[in-house]
Length: 278
Image 1: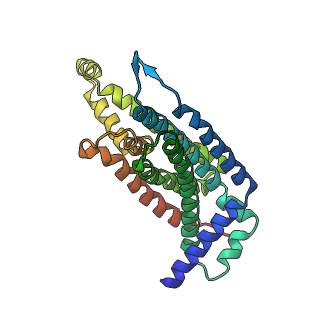
Image 2: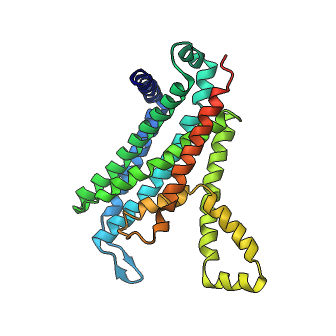
């Protein structure tokens, strides 16, 4: 077990160093860091909403929450970009066959790639969120430890994107795999809005008059079974705005994403085990 684990860690290490050495990755990190530094001006000055002045703490939490979500969306997209070319690039340049010709099992190779990408992107996102955390503290003196905890929770979304793109890249072109996962996220975001509207008293009354309870039950089932990327992110960002946890169902998005990660991981290991490596 120790040898198996050491091989996985070694492949994960090579996966991290290989991506970090890419000039495009360094450029993206610099651009993202500059964007985050530009947000510091939003923490200064006074703002009013509906004629009422916003307190400094409300301002900090609101701006930090918006920046938090932008960073998460950006890093999730970056996770898709990096993941979609892993198997294709290493298969075409011979790296994949070279690694697997050594005493390295296929599951060790896949596990190393997953762990390497996940650690790299989680650290990338954590650093960006850490910059926002320090900017908020230096400009206002307000400390938000929950900000960094929310960042760690969103690493589950990164794992989902990595696993989904890696799996789909074995069955379709790389760009199609990326677009498919993006579509999953967009559909989840739209369905979340539709579900919120359909639960309003007016929508409930209209559905009762039209007798569409069966359709409502069907779409409700689809809603709960669909990957909850946007809702898991909303759950994490709710800590930043100081919202209290409500009913136990509020943690369902995290349970949903964890379950999908387990399923996608199992399918990925099974699919790669049956791949033809030239």
